[in-house]
Length: 309
Image (cartoon, rainbow, N blue to C red):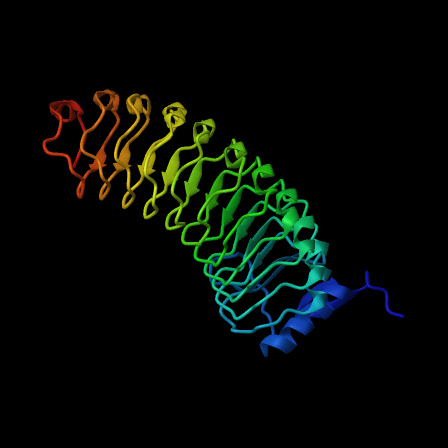
């Protein structure tokens, strides 16, 4: 019986035997050998190695549809990039990728992830936009090291109840999914800096969304939002707020508390007036109000020094 910790050359790279075998398995599926690469880019194809282990794997644009179970052999792999293929699922052995910090499987045909995916103890970046994802595993909230998630352009109708446990999350992009609503406790994502929730079909923002006090960018256009909760006044770190193409009729009286705002898009809503507190938005550089019912703009807007409308 061969020793899995012995080394074997794949091309000119000395690797642990089990990892060399996994590269051969991938080669058989893809139909060509994987070159050694020194750095990773969006379109990388090949592998990076260090100390006899694969630490990075790029499989961009090869149009393969399956992955071998031996993918889990890469226990020291930090980055896995597999955009623009025909992959529909990851093998359950993905849970053995204990060192994985970054995964990008955008532009595939993935419909679901195995529950074992939630056992990755170091994962920080998860990109899975433009797939056919219908659901996430129930224990998705166990991925507590996640800092960035991109799930835009999928078929998600709900997020798991455990989602608000991801309290290290900095960036969340879930636009263009048929969610209809956000899970209860969503405002528990207290470290969020950027939130993209466009085209979800949501009718309101959580009444406690103001608890996201570190949020700097909120994109919530093209929904059915009728009003903004009063708590939004607490989001004083907010710099960019896009709420275009909604059904908003009024803004909270203390909307001017958002003094960090530099870009504000309220176009194509049902606004007929603006609160006088908006004169305090001295950092505002871009304001869009087209497609509302506002007769004449308040004079105080002219006193905001760098404002363009």
